[in-house]
Length: 255
Ligand code: GCO
Image (cartoon, helix red, strand yellow):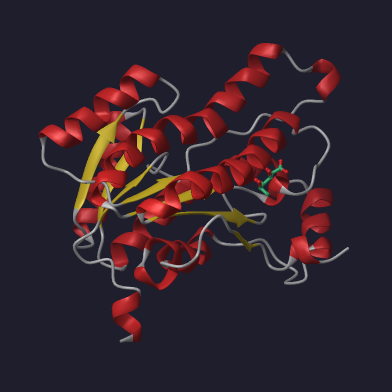
């Protein structure tokens, strides 16, 4: 019984921004739990490479190259899924960028680019997915937040605002879509070992700060987020809605 609860066999999961980094780790985890995975990104070549690697591991993988900030492209992508008979049962909104600069020096275009990529995309892709989940009376939406969904750090204001918005968008999705059998939740990763964080990891002072500020005294590994994603993507979370689960080594819980 227990394992059935976490079994994603027969389900199709779309993971945005999944050719590398956390998105790729989420895709691997959902595939290991039995899901067919649709990889997304803007670079078709990188997607094809990631798909080939995952197929070599025995996973059922499709690719869908589209820009999650481009509304016509998002609408067209889902029209393509419809035409191909692909029902997206699980949407994991992972796509995101980081841009570090003090607010006083921040260009509006850079602010907007981060908000568009990290927050508006979750609305655009979530809305298209939910338009198909509602009639089916079932669906799982997992938005990727951050420690900055709760706490601010200097020089990452647009990222922080977007991730705070992700937490509240998740609750808004739950408010409107839970009655249709859709569970919308979020994951808040801690400081993870990713390309996006390379500049921080290789900075001895920042590395020391993360290790001192995190009860687990270490950075997280992307694959350590997979279990939380599988839980939120599976029947095990059918009565969980509007939540954000932090997988952060305890950082958000301590001063
Ligand atoms: C930063 C980092 C963070 C982490 C993560 C923490 O510049 O502080 O990029 O934003 O990536 O979001 O949860």
